[in-house]
Image 1: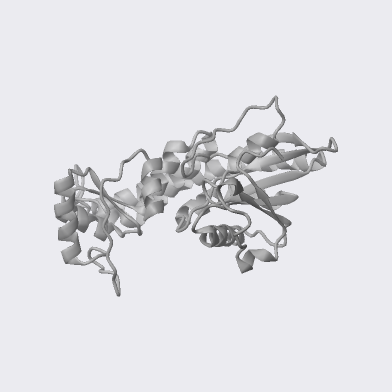
Image 2 (image 1 turned 90 degrees about the horizontal axis):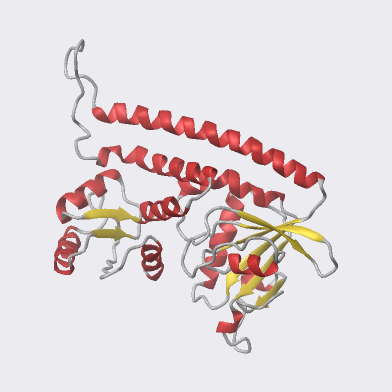
Length: 323
């Protein structure tokens, strides 16, 4: 719930109340119990809330039923993350990837749109015509195909750029990890002084579009260091699929630097989330250096490394230390 609070903040919203419920099984109509829906309705009215955010993914029917009952806008975790990505995307390809994920999110939820059962008709037609949902479905599918075609063209351009880089024999390093672990801060400290700084802010998903900068080892050897979008637990599958072509760049790195916020109470969850996503995009047998960032916020003498991480090569790095 704390992470959901931070996600809302990243999307420009203020959280004014929270409510939880323990369930043996999800309610197909509302996800939660009917009595809890009434409690949320009263709470939202008393607090004059503009929207209700659920920490789970909702079906189209559940969205419609909740909005009809609560009389407020309802947003699920997936839609919230998609909205943050839409807010942050700045490159042409990034915007296309977010739009693709949004359309694929909407497709199975057409049933939840008010008026879905209205029928179309017009001059030269007999009978009521086809349901609006069918025409909307075909429209979405056409848009999805167009975006995928554009992304394929962008991928070819990226493949060409990557081939040139590989031919130049310059080593590449990718920074990966949970959102807000400090990857962009590390990149700014390592990159060459005359190159542009990467945007840094203490919030989830401050960095969305990948950034690459030239850097130099103490020996004088050059290398390319790249920042990537941060991961988060329950990251929407459609979003991973949409960004897969960009994330695949990690596969071609000579070294992966896995950045972990050492001060996080959910350190193991952050680690597992990142490793699972890397596995999803086909990262195998790559050299991984685990970096515990923000170690200035913890007591190193009393901190223990989780067993699952203890076999890895790792270093502790205070947030603002220059490597």
